[in-house]
Length: 267
Image (tube, rainbow, N blue to C red):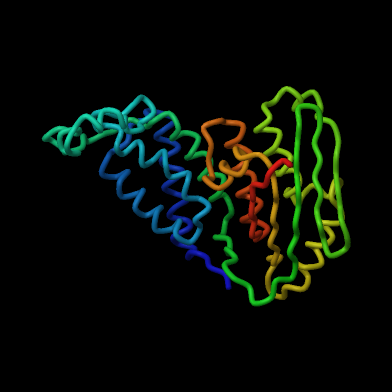
């Protein structure tokens, strides 16, 4: 079973995101009522694509950025709320929003992520449930300051990859290296490094008539809690991790993966 939104709603969402990006790049000042309406529509569309939902946070924070006791990033200051007996006391007697609100710092990144996810001309089909699971893959991945390694259990046997980080990645944080190692394992376009996985999915695609969707469920196990948590939330305050998560979401969407990132003990 697959779901998708209609073509007109997909194009309408694309138009809204393009307009928001233009406003953010020029004045970064948004009409509150209009932004509220756009957010409501995007929430409706993203019920079909829940993986996109974390990238609405910048819009939510922007809409509420006018309220008292919000920090510079738009987040509510909890300590201030604890010293008051009601929300009305915190926000004041006048809860009427201004005509315009200024975009919060994370809005630019969220809009760019949404623009990337909405880039396809036609709305993609999201795989919800399949009567026949053609392929289930299990993988383990780990990384250190010097190197990385991962294994993948496939119907044709155990595949593995290992190596040392190059100069461009050896200085990155351990959290980045762990998530990057997982991403490299999932990246189905890296046929040079994982030809067996690429061939396997190609054969599955041929079996699915009238569709290019491989029915694949992939379980990845890691001992890094940050990598697991970042994937589960769909976002990160670290720009480098944010980009990796977005890359994983794109792979999920375009290859109809059921991707599970599971934390296990390093022991």
